[in-house]
Image 1 (tube, rainbow, N blue to C red):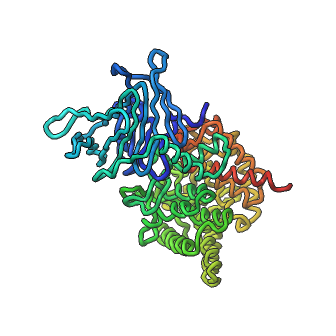
Image 2 (image 1 turned 60 degrees about the vertical axis):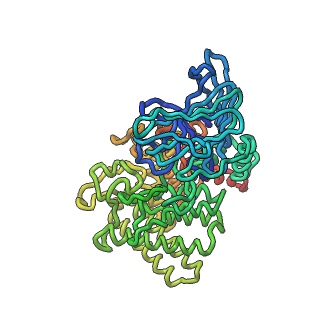
Image 3 (image 1 turned 135 degrees about the vertical axis):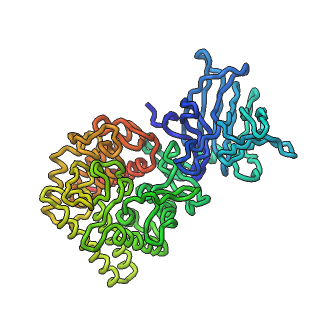
Length: 570
């Protein structure tokens, strides 16, 4: 099985919204669609514009076989098991889909909304308007024909479509909001060569395994440009369904990008931090059309920034470090001020989505919930701020944040450590002990030597004895738990971010061999099942969205760690 499977992995290009992918249309069928993946994932259309229909000379539909590579999508077309033609796509400068073909035609059938229509400019150029998507599509050709059609119905048109045809044809579609930019005169071959070169420069390697190539492709292709409410280029989780930038996903994407493009790694933080509320609250997610504050996400950013600074020294400029420090200070202030009644209490998550573990077992009774992961992340945030103040030669300010970190750690141990593990509790019902079967209980391992050794040893013993680490990686819910579900989202499946957090926690406790074994298992999972959103903890099968950025980022991070470990003498 190829990992570059177009049924699972969309075709797009770095800093573009234009995408071709297999998705379900209005009728529920799985089809190849031209999409413009702007506007967020709460829109039912998910940016669907046109269903692609591949046709023979007599107009009958041909059966496509897709072949995906980072720089082009090729389609072989069959009827009665006989090959009838070939069509290829690539993406050029700006939002331009280039197409060429022979022996068949391709029809882009607009999915349809209330006021769609087609028209011809005074200069002769044809255009179709996807009114519901606020987008215009202008075709051009250098060979063959491009025809636009639509049946006028009083104030709109039905069956709007454009078709590229001819014994051989070459041209494309310009996707634009307002006036059409000048049509690209570049040939298909030059465009695909340019895209191929851009991807090669992106990863900078002559040889890659298929899994590494897929991971680097997804970080490359899932990135969209700074536009509208997006102040910086940012990496979607996926161009399948998850077309947002969430406020902890961004930190893991940044870790994966730091070794490839440090400026883009910084942009992942800035795209979110530019929307930070004056209270310090971060949005749940952002996209080009705005941001949502219905939820927030856990403050992993201090941990992630420290991880990047330790791993890829010099990734951020002095000005960028000042920016990140100031934003983290506001973020820390939000959690310490607005999620607890007084300094003698631990901060809390109001909803499972705030924790990032959306439906985890420790939210089985609702919220707000107090648990060990949030104070751990805040400890690490305070320590990161202190580290940056020491870099700025401000030791007294650094000491203040060190004290905040120590105070949170002591409060967490006093209120949540039960001698075996860290508990989860509801703020309003402190006597109610919540399930202790989630992987989240082990997050304090990230504190390294700041966690008392006797506590660390008991946590490590519990992690090993309960079987959280399966053949494929660390399950988010203990497999023997009554809350465990094979495809239960955060109640069992293996996730890349929590895998990296546990990996780093093991490393911080000196458990390098176990950490490396965990990394190897997760990498084998990705190599077998691709860069899925999450994986069945007992079978390793990829679940949900199959083309995820943070899975790719963690895979590349582990590959970097293990390759360096092989070069280090024992």
